[in-house]
Image (cartoon, rainbow, N blue to C red; front, side, top):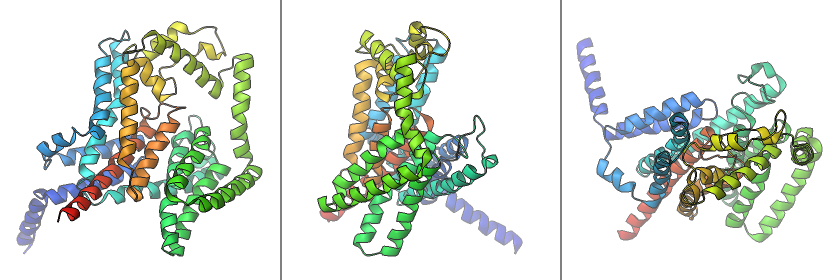
Length: 425
Protein backbone atom coordinates (compact mmCIF):
# COMPACT_ATOMS: atom_id res chain seq x y z
CA UNK A 1 0.00 0.00 0.00
CA UNK A 2 2.85 2.34 0.86
CA UNK A 3 4.64 1.54 -2.41
CA UNK A 4 1.39 2.19 -4.31
CA UNK A 5 0.97 5.50 -2.53
CA UNK A 6 4.54 6.48 -3.38
CA UNK A 7 4.00 5.53 -7.00
CA UNK A 8 0.77 7.51 -7.17
CA UNK A 9 2.39 10.53 -5.55
CA UNK A 10 5.31 10.26 -7.96
CA UNK A 11 2.95 10.10 -10.93
CA UNK A 12 1.04 13.14 -9.69
CA UNK A 13 4.28 15.07 -9.21
CA UNK A 14 5.49 14.03 -12.65
CA UNK A 15 2.25 15.18 -14.28
CA UNK A 16 2.48 18.49 -12.43
CA UNK A 17 6.06 19.05 -13.53
CA UNK A 18 4.99 18.43 -17.14
CA UNK A 19 2.03 20.79 -16.88
CA UNK A 20 2.42 24.30 -18.34
CA UNK A 21 -0.41 25.51 -16.08
CA UNK A 22 1.46 24.32 -12.98
CA UNK A 23 4.64 26.11 -14.02
CA UNK A 24 2.66 29.26 -14.78
CA UNK A 25 1.11 29.11 -11.31
CA UNK A 26 4.59 28.71 -9.80
CA UNK A 27 5.75 31.79 -11.68
CA UNK A 28 2.75 33.67 -10.27
CA UNK A 29 3.64 32.60 -6.74
CA UNK A 30 7.23 33.80 -7.07
CA UNK A 31 5.99 37.08 -8.58
CA UNK A 32 3.76 37.51 -5.52
CA UNK A 33 6.67 36.76 -3.20
CA UNK A 34 8.87 39.24 -5.08
CA UNK A 35 6.32 42.02 -4.66
CA UNK A 36 5.62 41.13 -1.03
CA UNK A 37 9.32 41.05 -0.08
CA UNK A 38 10.33 44.24 -1.90
CA UNK A 39 9.37 46.62 0.96
CA UNK A 40 11.37 44.51 3.42
CA UNK A 41 14.46 43.06 1.74
CA UNK A 42 16.45 43.66 -1.43
CA UNK A 43 18.06 40.22 -1.14
CA UNK A 44 14.78 38.30 -0.85
CA UNK A 45 13.24 40.29 -3.70
CA UNK A 46 16.23 39.43 -5.87
CA UNK A 47 16.10 35.72 -4.98
CA UNK A 48 12.35 35.41 -5.63
CA UNK A 49 12.69 37.33 -8.88
CA UNK A 50 15.45 34.99 -10.08
CA UNK A 51 13.33 31.94 -9.20
CA UNK A 52 10.36 33.47 -11.03
CA UNK A 53 12.43 33.92 -14.19
CA UNK A 54 13.88 30.42 -13.87
CA UNK A 55 10.42 28.84 -13.61
CA UNK A 56 9.34 30.54 -16.83
CA UNK A 57 11.95 28.72 -18.90
CA UNK A 58 10.57 25.12 -19.17
CA UNK A 59 7.38 25.99 -21.08
CA UNK A 60 8.30 29.35 -22.59
CA UNK A 61 6.89 29.82 -26.08
CA UNK A 62 10.08 31.29 -27.50
CA UNK A 63 8.57 32.45 -30.78
CA UNK A 64 5.68 34.26 -29.06
CA UNK A 65 8.03 35.76 -26.49
CA UNK A 66 10.48 37.08 -29.11
CA UNK A 67 7.56 38.49 -31.07
CA UNK A 68 6.32 40.30 -27.96
CA UNK A 69 9.72 41.99 -27.59
CA UNK A 70 9.15 43.87 -30.86
CA UNK A 71 6.31 45.88 -29.31
CA UNK A 72 7.39 49.47 -28.53
CA UNK A 73 6.54 49.10 -24.83
CA UNK A 74 9.08 46.26 -24.64
CA UNK A 75 11.59 47.54 -27.18
CA UNK A 76 12.09 50.92 -25.45
CA UNK A 77 13.44 49.58 -22.10
CA UNK A 78 15.57 47.04 -23.97
CA UNK A 79 16.97 49.91 -26.08
CA UNK A 80 18.11 51.75 -22.93
CA UNK A 81 20.02 48.67 -21.74
CA UNK A 82 21.61 48.29 -25.18
CA UNK A 83 22.55 51.99 -25.15
CA UNK A 84 24.18 51.56 -21.74
CA UNK A 85 26.25 48.67 -23.11
CA UNK A 86 27.23 50.60 -26.24
CA UNK A 87 28.07 53.63 -24.09
CA UNK A 88 30.93 51.69 -22.53
CA UNK A 89 32.75 51.94 -25.87
CA UNK A 90 33.22 55.73 -25.76
CA UNK A 91 33.56 56.20 -22.00
CA UNK A 92 36.87 57.23 -20.44
CA UNK A 93 35.99 55.65 -17.08
CA UNK A 94 37.61 52.45 -15.88
CA UNK A 95 35.99 49.26 -17.08
CA UNK A 96 34.89 48.51 -13.55
CA UNK A 97 33.03 51.83 -13.41
CA UNK A 98 31.52 51.26 -16.85
CA UNK A 99 30.14 47.83 -16.02
CA UNK A 100 28.94 49.04 -12.61
CA UNK A 101 26.95 51.80 -14.36
CA UNK A 102 25.34 49.28 -16.72
CA UNK A 103 23.98 47.27 -13.79
CA UNK A 104 21.11 49.66 -12.79
CA UNK A 105 19.63 49.38 -16.28
CA UNK A 106 19.57 45.57 -16.39
CA UNK A 107 16.39 45.33 -14.30
CA UNK A 108 14.51 46.88 -17.24
CA UNK A 109 14.98 43.59 -19.12
CA UNK A 110 12.56 41.95 -16.64
CA UNK A 111 9.77 44.35 -17.60
CA UNK A 112 9.06 42.74 -21.02
CA UNK A 113 9.13 39.33 -19.33
CA UNK A 114 6.44 40.39 -16.84
CA UNK A 115 4.34 41.94 -19.60
CA UNK A 116 4.53 38.67 -21.53
CA UNK A 117 3.68 36.48 -18.54
CA UNK A 118 0.81 38.49 -17.07
CA UNK A 119 -0.68 38.91 -20.51
CA UNK A 120 -1.33 35.17 -20.16
CA UNK A 121 -1.86 34.81 -16.41
CA UNK A 122 -5.10 35.61 -14.60
CA UNK A 123 -3.37 36.23 -11.26
CA UNK A 124 -1.87 39.66 -11.76
CA UNK A 125 -4.12 41.06 -9.03
CA UNK A 126 -2.42 38.69 -6.57
CA UNK A 127 0.83 40.61 -7.04
CA UNK A 128 -0.81 44.01 -6.53
CA UNK A 129 -2.64 42.86 -3.40
CA UNK A 130 0.53 41.27 -2.02
CA UNK A 131 2.42 44.55 -2.32
CA UNK A 132 -0.43 46.47 -0.65
CA UNK A 133 -0.68 44.02 2.28
CA UNK A 134 3.10 44.00 2.70
CA UNK A 135 3.20 47.81 2.85
CA UNK A 136 0.32 47.83 5.37
CA UNK A 137 2.32 45.51 7.63
CA UNK A 138 5.38 47.70 7.19
CA UNK A 139 3.28 50.68 8.27
CA UNK A 140 2.47 48.87 11.51
CA UNK A 141 6.16 48.17 12.09
CA UNK A 142 6.95 51.80 11.35
CA UNK A 143 4.68 52.91 14.19
CA UNK A 144 6.21 50.37 16.55
CA UNK A 145 9.74 51.50 15.69
CA UNK A 146 8.71 55.14 16.19
CA UNK A 147 7.86 54.34 19.81
CA UNK A 148 10.37 51.51 20.35
CA UNK A 149 13.50 52.33 18.26
CA UNK A 150 15.32 49.20 19.45
CA UNK A 151 13.01 47.11 17.28
CA UNK A 152 14.50 48.54 14.09
CA UNK A 153 16.68 46.35 11.90
CA UNK A 154 18.11 49.46 10.25
CA UNK A 155 20.93 50.85 12.38
CA UNK A 156 23.22 52.57 9.83
CA UNK A 157 22.23 55.23 10.87
CA UNK A 158 18.86 54.74 12.58
CA UNK A 159 15.93 56.79 11.26
CA UNK A 160 12.72 57.58 13.09
CA UNK A 161 9.98 55.10 12.19
CA UNK A 162 12.15 53.12 9.77
CA UNK A 163 12.25 49.37 10.41
CA UNK A 164 14.23 48.51 7.27
CA UNK A 165 15.71 50.43 4.32
CA UNK A 166 15.16 54.22 4.44
CA UNK A 167 12.51 56.91 4.66
CA UNK A 168 12.60 57.71 0.91
CA UNK A 169 11.78 54.12 -0.10
CA UNK A 170 9.12 53.84 2.60
CA UNK A 171 7.47 57.10 1.56
CA UNK A 172 7.41 55.96 -2.07
CA UNK A 173 5.63 52.74 -1.09
CA UNK A 174 3.10 54.37 1.23
CA UNK A 175 2.32 57.14 -1.26
CA UNK A 176 1.74 54.69 -4.10
CA UNK A 177 -0.53 52.46 -2.01
CA UNK A 178 -2.52 55.33 -0.48
CA UNK A 179 -3.25 57.09 -3.77
CA UNK A 180 -3.86 53.82 -5.65
CA UNK A 181 -6.65 52.99 -3.19
CA UNK A 182 -8.56 56.10 -4.30
CA UNK A 183 -9.85 54.29 -7.40
CA UNK A 184 -11.41 51.22 -5.71
CA UNK A 185 -12.79 53.45 -2.94
CA UNK A 186 -14.68 55.64 -5.42
CA UNK A 187 -15.93 52.61 -7.35
CA UNK A 188 -17.17 50.94 -4.17
CA UNK A 189 -18.95 54.11 -3.06
CA UNK A 190 -20.73 54.32 -6.41
CA UNK A 191 -21.81 50.71 -5.97
CA UNK A 192 -23.00 51.57 -2.41
CA UNK A 193 -20.65 49.02 -0.86
CA UNK A 194 -19.95 51.33 2.04
CA UNK A 195 -18.36 48.89 4.49
CA UNK A 196 -15.61 47.79 2.12
CA UNK A 197 -15.11 51.37 0.93
CA UNK A 198 -14.75 52.45 4.54
CA UNK A 199 -12.20 49.72 5.21
CA UNK A 200 -10.05 50.76 2.23
CA UNK A 201 -10.42 54.43 3.20
CA UNK A 202 -9.15 53.63 6.69
CA UNK A 203 -6.18 51.78 5.16
CA UNK A 204 -5.36 54.71 2.85
CA UNK A 205 -5.63 57.16 5.74
CA UNK A 206 -3.32 54.99 7.84
CA UNK A 207 -0.57 55.48 5.26
CA UNK A 208 -1.09 59.25 5.22
CA UNK A 209 -1.21 59.46 9.02
CA UNK A 210 2.06 57.54 9.22
CA UNK A 211 3.72 59.94 6.78
CA UNK A 212 2.30 62.96 8.64
CA UNK A 213 3.28 61.93 12.15
CA UNK A 214 6.18 59.48 11.79
CA UNK A 215 8.33 60.26 8.75
CA UNK A 216 7.91 61.39 5.14
CA UNK A 217 10.27 62.34 2.34
CA UNK A 218 10.13 65.75 0.72
CA UNK A 219 9.77 64.06 -2.67
CA UNK A 220 6.53 62.47 -1.46
CA UNK A 221 5.22 65.83 -0.26
CA UNK A 222 5.71 67.20 -3.78
CA UNK A 223 4.30 64.24 -5.70
CA UNK A 224 1.20 63.40 -3.61
CA UNK A 225 -0.79 66.46 -4.80
CA UNK A 226 0.19 65.71 -8.42
CA UNK A 227 -0.94 62.09 -8.17
CA UNK A 228 -4.24 63.05 -6.56
CA UNK A 229 -4.71 65.75 -9.20
CA UNK A 230 -4.37 63.17 -11.97
CA UNK A 231 -6.92 60.93 -10.25
CA UNK A 232 -9.39 63.79 -9.84
CA UNK A 233 -9.14 64.86 -13.48
CA UNK A 234 -9.61 61.30 -14.74
CA UNK A 235 -12.27 59.93 -12.42
CA UNK A 236 -14.21 62.72 -10.71
CA UNK A 237 -16.70 65.38 -11.71
CA UNK A 238 -15.85 69.03 -11.07
CA UNK A 239 -18.27 69.27 -8.16
CA UNK A 240 -16.72 66.22 -6.52
CA UNK A 241 -13.25 67.61 -7.17
CA UNK A 242 -14.16 70.86 -5.39
CA UNK A 243 -15.65 69.04 -2.40
CA UNK A 244 -12.74 66.61 -2.05
CA UNK A 245 -10.15 69.35 -2.57
CA UNK A 246 -11.75 71.37 0.21
CA UNK A 247 -11.72 68.33 2.48
CA UNK A 248 -8.09 67.55 1.68
CA UNK A 249 -7.05 71.14 2.30
CA UNK A 250 -8.83 71.03 5.65
CA UNK A 251 -7.22 67.72 6.56
CA UNK A 252 -3.87 69.06 5.44
CA UNK A 253 -4.25 72.15 7.61
CA UNK A 254 -5.14 70.02 10.62
CA UNK A 255 -2.20 67.71 9.94
CA UNK A 256 0.11 70.71 9.58
CA UNK A 257 -0.92 72.11 12.94
CA UNK A 258 -0.91 68.74 14.71
CA UNK A 259 2.33 67.29 13.32
CA UNK A 260 5.68 68.88 14.23
CA UNK A 261 7.38 66.25 12.07
CA UNK A 262 5.47 67.38 8.96
CA UNK A 263 6.30 71.05 9.59
CA UNK A 264 9.95 70.18 10.19
CA UNK A 265 10.18 68.28 6.89
CA UNK A 266 8.60 71.13 4.94
CA UNK A 267 10.71 73.80 6.66
CA UNK A 268 13.92 72.13 5.53
CA UNK A 269 13.22 73.25 1.95
CA UNK A 270 13.86 76.90 2.82
CA UNK A 271 16.62 76.32 5.36
CA UNK A 272 18.54 73.96 3.04
CA UNK A 273 18.40 76.47 0.20
CA UNK A 274 19.48 79.40 2.38
CA UNK A 275 22.45 77.55 3.89
CA UNK A 276 23.59 76.40 0.44
CA UNK A 277 23.35 79.84 -1.20
CA UNK A 278 24.84 81.83 1.69
CA UNK A 279 27.47 79.41 3.00
CA UNK A 280 27.84 76.74 0.30
CA UNK A 281 26.87 74.03 2.80
CA UNK A 282 26.19 70.54 1.37
CA UNK A 283 22.54 70.44 2.42
CA UNK A 284 20.19 67.95 0.74
CA UNK A 285 18.59 70.58 -1.50
CA UNK A 286 21.88 72.43 -1.97
CA UNK A 287 23.67 69.31 -3.17
CA UNK A 288 20.95 68.63 -5.71
CA UNK A 289 21.24 72.15 -7.09
CA UNK A 290 25.02 71.77 -7.26
CA UNK A 291 24.78 68.38 -8.99
CA UNK A 292 22.21 69.67 -11.50
CA UNK A 293 24.24 72.78 -12.36
CA UNK A 294 27.39 70.76 -12.99
CA UNK A 295 25.53 68.01 -14.88
CA UNK A 296 24.05 70.56 -17.28
CA UNK A 297 27.61 71.68 -17.98
CA UNK A 298 28.71 68.09 -18.65
CA UNK A 299 25.75 67.61 -20.99
CA UNK A 300 26.64 70.78 -22.91
CA UNK A 301 30.14 69.41 -23.50
CA UNK A 302 28.84 66.25 -25.24
CA UNK A 303 25.18 66.85 -26.10
CA UNK A 304 24.63 64.16 -28.73
CA UNK A 305 26.01 60.90 -27.32
CA UNK A 306 27.21 61.98 -23.87
CA UNK A 307 30.44 61.08 -22.12
CA UNK A 308 29.75 57.35 -22.02
CA UNK A 309 28.58 54.81 -19.47
CA UNK A 310 30.04 55.26 -15.99
CA UNK A 311 31.65 58.63 -16.75
CA UNK A 312 29.70 60.72 -14.23
CA UNK A 313 31.91 60.29 -11.16
CA UNK A 314 35.11 61.06 -13.10
CA UNK A 315 33.52 64.25 -14.44
CA UNK A 316 32.54 65.37 -10.94
CA UNK A 317 36.06 64.66 -9.69
CA UNK A 318 37.50 66.92 -12.38
CA UNK A 319 35.34 69.93 -11.44
CA UNK A 320 35.35 69.52 -7.63
CA UNK A 321 36.48 72.76 -6.01
CA UNK A 322 37.15 73.85 -2.45
CA UNK A 323 37.67 71.52 0.44
CA UNK A 324 36.04 70.49 3.68
CA UNK A 325 32.36 71.05 4.32
CA UNK A 326 31.37 72.54 0.94
CA UNK A 327 28.81 71.46 -1.66
CA UNK A 328 31.22 72.30 -4.49
CA UNK A 329 33.69 69.70 -3.17
CA UNK A 330 31.22 66.80 -3.33
CA UNK A 331 31.88 64.01 -5.83
CA UNK A 332 29.10 61.67 -6.90
CA UNK A 333 28.23 59.20 -9.63
CA UNK A 334 24.51 60.04 -9.59
CA UNK A 335 23.27 63.62 -10.20
CA UNK A 336 19.94 62.87 -8.47
CA UNK A 337 17.85 63.53 -11.54
CA UNK A 338 16.95 60.72 -13.93
CA UNK A 339 17.09 62.81 -17.09
CA UNK A 340 20.44 64.38 -16.19
CA UNK A 341 21.80 60.97 -15.20
CA UNK A 342 20.98 59.72 -18.68
CA UNK A 343 22.00 62.95 -20.44
CA UNK A 344 25.52 63.05 -18.97
CA UNK A 345 26.24 59.47 -20.04
CA UNK A 346 24.33 59.13 -23.32
CA UNK A 347 23.31 62.63 -24.37
CA UNK A 348 20.25 63.41 -26.46
CA UNK A 349 20.08 59.79 -27.60
CA UNK A 350 19.62 58.65 -24.01
CA UNK A 351 17.05 61.37 -23.25
CA UNK A 352 15.02 60.31 -26.29
CA UNK A 353 15.01 56.66 -25.21
CA UNK A 354 14.14 57.54 -21.60
CA UNK A 355 11.24 59.78 -22.64
CA UNK A 356 10.04 57.09 -25.05
CA UNK A 357 9.89 54.59 -22.17
CA UNK A 358 7.74 56.88 -20.04
CA UNK A 359 5.48 58.04 -22.86
CA UNK A 360 4.89 54.58 -24.31
CA UNK A 361 4.11 53.15 -20.88
CA UNK A 362 1.74 56.01 -20.09
CA UNK A 363 -0.15 55.30 -23.31
CA UNK A 364 -0.67 51.67 -22.28
CA UNK A 365 -2.85 52.77 -19.36
CA UNK A 366 -5.31 55.08 -21.13
CA UNK A 367 -8.50 53.13 -20.43
CA UNK A 368 -10.56 52.73 -17.27
CA UNK A 369 -10.03 49.96 -14.73
CA UNK A 370 -7.97 49.19 -11.65
CA UNK A 371 -4.98 47.78 -13.56
CA UNK A 372 -4.94 50.85 -15.80
CA UNK A 373 -5.05 53.15 -12.78
CA UNK A 374 -2.27 51.34 -10.92
CA UNK A 375 -0.02 51.23 -13.99
CA UNK A 376 -0.66 54.90 -14.77
CA UNK A 377 0.09 55.86 -11.19
CA UNK A 378 3.36 53.89 -11.14
CA UNK A 379 4.58 55.69 -14.27
CA UNK A 380 3.47 59.14 -13.07
CA UNK A 381 5.11 58.64 -9.69
CA UNK A 382 8.36 57.55 -11.32
CA UNK A 383 8.36 60.47 -13.76
CA UNK A 384 7.88 63.14 -11.10
CA UNK A 385 10.06 61.63 -8.37
CA UNK A 386 12.78 61.23 -10.99
CA UNK A 387 13.02 65.02 -11.04
CA UNK A 388 14.74 64.74 -7.65
CA UNK A 389 16.31 61.27 -7.86
CA UNK A 390 17.39 58.73 -10.46
CA UNK A 391 14.49 56.51 -9.51
CA UNK A 392 14.39 54.38 -12.62
CA UNK A 393 17.97 53.30 -11.88
CA UNK A 394 17.66 53.08 -8.08
CA UNK A 395 17.12 49.52 -6.86
CA UNK A 396 13.93 49.93 -4.87
CA UNK A 397 12.05 52.49 -6.93
CA UNK A 398 13.29 50.92 -10.16
CA UNK A 399 11.86 47.55 -9.18
CA UNK A 400 8.61 49.21 -8.11
CA UNK A 401 8.40 50.55 -11.67
CA UNK A 402 9.34 47.27 -13.35
CA UNK A 403 6.90 45.18 -11.29
CA UNK A 404 4.10 47.76 -11.38
CA UNK A 405 4.22 48.43 -15.11
CA UNK A 406 5.00 44.82 -16.00
CA UNK A 407 2.16 43.27 -14.00
CA UNK A 408 -0.46 45.98 -14.56
CA UNK A 409 0.52 46.29 -18.23
CA UNK A 410 0.16 42.54 -18.76
CA UNK A 411 -3.28 42.64 -17.13
CA UNK A 412 -4.35 45.53 -19.38
CA UNK A 413 -3.14 43.81 -22.55
CA UNK A 414 -4.91 40.62 -21.51
CA UNK A 415 -8.17 42.52 -20.98
CA UNK A 416 -7.80 44.26 -24.35
CA UNK A 417 -7.27 40.94 -26.13
CA UNK A 418 -10.29 39.42 -24.37
CA UNK A 419 -12.43 42.37 -25.46
CA UNK A 420 -11.22 42.05 -29.04
CA UNK A 421 -11.97 38.33 -28.94
CA UNK A 422 -15.52 38.98 -27.70
CA UNK A 423 -16.02 41.61 -30.40
CA UNK A 424 -14.73 39.23 -33.07
CA UNK A 425 -17.07 36.45 -32.02
